[in-house]
Every structure is written in C-alpha cells, then in structure tokens.
Length: 107
DNA sequence: CTGGTGACCATTA
DNA sequence: TTAATGGCCACCA
Image (cartoon, rainbow, N blue to C red; front, top):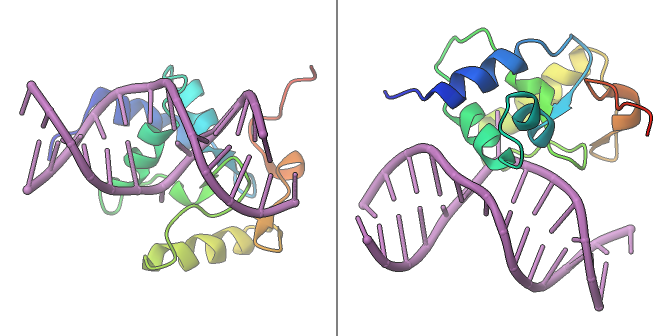
C-alpha cells in the first residue's frame, strides 16, 4: 500500500485532537499545510491502516455532522465513540462553537 | 492519457 | 433555512 507524505502529515495532525473535542476536514487539511484540500483529509481517513492510533472519529465535516455514508458501519461507530467522550449531538449535529479544535481565533 | 468518484467547503440564490 | 454550484485533487479503471 502506497502511503503518501500528505497522508502522514494529516494523520499526525489528527493525533493531536484532544479527547472530547472535534475538528473538521478543512481544518485538518489547513493545519497539515494543505489548505483547500479537505477532500484529501477525508481520503486520508478512509485509507487509514487498520489499528493505527489515530482518533479518526474526532474529524467531522464543516457542518458538525458525521460525514461517513450511513451504509458504512463506521458511521454509527463514530457517533458512538464521540458520545462516549462527552461530545453532545443535537439533531445529528455537534455544536462546533463548543467542541471545535483548535479554537477559532477571535476575528 | 481521460473521465468518474468522493468520510469536503464556501458561496450564492 | 435548505439546495445547487463550482472548485479542489488524489486515486482508480
């Protein structure tokens, strides 16, 4: 399996997300030095090696929702894992203002 | 090489 | 508020 350098950088950033917090694909891409490549971040999660110590479940889309197609088993698992960490879902969405990592700088 | 796909996103209507 | 649109780009047949 060919693993690109971009994947490694993305995974390294995802590892930094603290328990009980979440980040978005776009944020992860930006923090990985790959601005505008949110889709690549999603691809990197999809292609995670089994058993990798990467908290993939703490990455959601910009709307604060689980972005894995419901037909995939990991979709329900992601929500379960997050709730177990204290992340609150409200109508299928997470309040990013409260759980997003890193915190948005005041603008 | 070309074209289709996707665990995305900001903008516009 | 939701829905469509265009941009993004690695991967694969």
